[in-house]
Image (cartoon, rainbow, N blue to C red):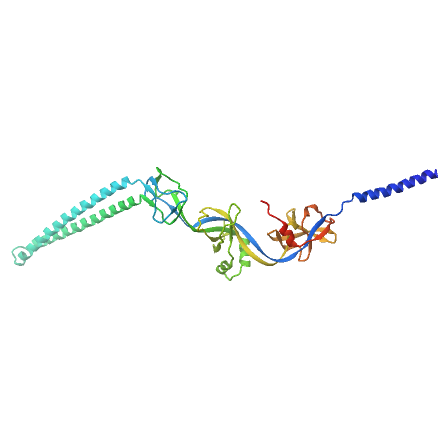
Length: 396
């Protein structure tokens, strides 16, 4: 019996150490992860805003008279000069009116000549009667009557001349309308969409213009800031007033709809200075050169305004993660980690700029944060920030 008890005791001891060794054998070692110290860097951050592109001058082209379009001289996207014909309107009625107007001028001239003859005859009569009255051969009443007739004839002559002037004015207006039958470009620029073509009836009262001509050697890029962003701009930009602050702004970059940067930098020149009550935003305008004509009226894009920040606290962007709307990093204490909430100022070039939560010199996990939980053990691999951010390649 004692032998049996001894055997069971030995078996229990062997089983205990066997399980202990087996447990040790299956324990997972802590992951080896790169860690970095939060560093101080001078960085350039970019504030991005969607923009709409417009020509510096945009003129609607409208008809000055009513008529049917009989000829379109240009095409959409074509460069035109100020005064260049764009459209021809049918002007048959105006031509008929011009003929009638010329006839009215001729009739008025005939009336003038008749009135002038009447004046001349009345003047002769007056001149004839004057010496007779002076010699008392006839009474003064006849002379006064002749003078009244002369005055009446002179009035009729003036009326005939006035009628001719009115006829000329009517004729000139009709000729002008005929000239308006050729719709010309108001400025030099690029023709936009042509909304009406041959056979369309147009008039000065049309809500839709026939087309638009835009001056696009330079273009305007309009964008808006909300009130908070606007006051941040006022606070962070050097200058005593708005004009000085705009002057001190660095050149800005335009990102095209395909994601590529536009070849030329632009400059912000104006701000409306008034909050739009409907949107709660304030509008800015930047100007970009466009000699190559790559930008057109109506284009869109994104403007990037650089801001130089000296002495920003930074960690690799890969060190941050989000959870329930908050941003965290895993801060390293000894061989374990804890999730520390941080406030991000900006993210630029694979760096996260930290506004609060950690300070320079604090050690954080740089990569692989998705594998961790608060209190996780790690094997820290001290790494330089630059080697982390330079190893991150963009994926296209």
